[in-house]
Length: 248
Image: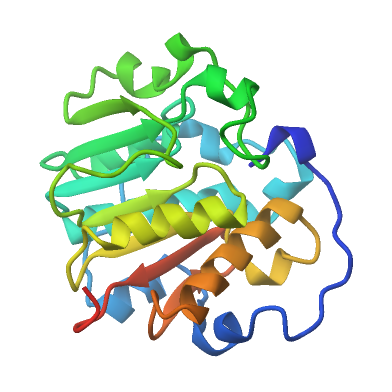
């Protein structure tokens, strides 16, 4: 969610703005259907009371719950050895990742606040928290399987081993979404999962940060970095992609 542009409306898009997403995105009704798709059995742990809050009109249709369920279901069932989060913020999503995959090593990356202020982190960025507040949620819970990294992903290269699950929720500029994903894919094997936050093609006409994320993912398909289907759970802001055989 982008505080500085909440509620911003976009011009009407043509039906051809996302031709690859139109062909590739499969809409699922809920996380039970997501579990069926991948043959998963275990329900997620939703250790986040804030997902039941309603603070903004964008939270209608239980959007926060759908987002949390999507991320937690993947972490709970994929059981990644190494997971990566781009965009720590307060660390609430990091908590979900940790409690659902306690055997994983989770690396979470956040741009240094001063680089957001200076404009080096793109335009569609989350609010610049003070450094001591970045990741405060997981630190308060004393979770020990998390490594915090302060870096601007425009310049940062992953060097953490093969990445089994990546959650991309940093700068929402299309170029950042594209480049963050491109870098991560180099360190993924078939069967790994990528999730993008603020992804929902049906809302791209309404919110410019969602449109920008969708444009970044569309470009990944157009340039052949993504191939085949991806999934979106209805009412969520999560896009989900499993790296297919023959891609990595």
